[in-house]
Image (cartoon, rainbow, N blue to C red; front, side, top):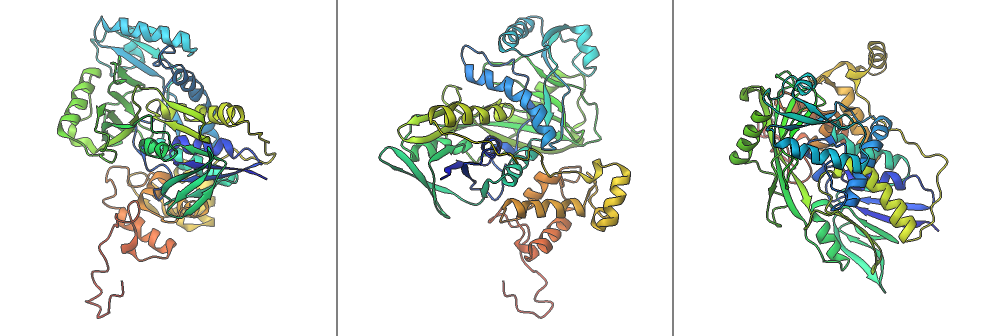
Length: 499
């Protein structure tokens, strides 16, 4: 009989765990997500940096320090296997004042203790060679060459898709309402879609991990949202930066970053604002927060793109545990329950290593579940981008499917073929509601200059056609976020609106 595992939360951490568990043939794994798709919570909005691992003190946060370094190394492999767009420009922790070099020296020591390769101090002259757009009056920097960036919204869906391809069952729009515990052991999960029997329940519910944990009888911590606000500039706006650039950290934040995104647009941010516990959905931006980001970024670099080139501001939320420590534990009571909670930054970086830790140390180790490797496990993702293919491959694809010759998103050169392919992959993965955000996560449509002003209706029409629903039933991210307001011309046509 197979061991039944339920993972709650299809963010990048839960999806990473699902992917690692999909390697084993004696498991039945269910990945539960209350949103309409994977990656629509904490994982949807962040800086997308793969940190090198020199910012966590191994005395205060030994697990975080260890898993961040291992996660950085694993992402080199995982981004290639899963075809997640990534680049590795390295990171400069800039000392704006001479006294900040002491802070940089502290992180150099942490890099040595954490085993992060290649980290060293650079003086002002070398700093300006590495990053010509940095503040010319900066004293120097700490250079970490192993830092990278990726398209983080792609990550959670790519991980989930690969896990499903290897046998994991994905259940979107499934809200957990209780954890059943009998005689000190977990027996399953109560949801709005029925009961899931389970021998092991893994709580990776992000901002709501404290609520899920309490359902299992473990109410020893709370999760507070920490908000980060950002600007994104148009892809063609400069000046840009070559490296990942930020200033020496404070006790509460790694500081404001200036980066050049995967699509070549400059991004600056975030803030680090601790919100009340009940503000777990507050992704609003504020004038004060955005002005703080602007002023901090101005100190960091010689020049920012003009404000008129800002195409979007947004905010993301990070789950902040009470004392900054990640809560990654398996319990004796209830036996079979595992918390993966409070995964604050660098959670995105550490996600692959967290997944291996949960499987190897907690499931195999503490819970003593014997695992048998599949001989047929497939590590490779399905995603591809038409515009990234060689010209001859593009021509071949258009000949086979003319939809690849019709550009829908002109800002990012995304074709109808890309969109239909994404929709078909969503259906195969188990997504019930094909949403605009789901297509955006996979293809990058609506992320460029127009932010969807010109292409959204065309994309919604393709979704309506492929999903077999009226245009006004297409949603941004599920029920309650309908894109249209109904068939407004039905009366002019003399028809009775049945909807």
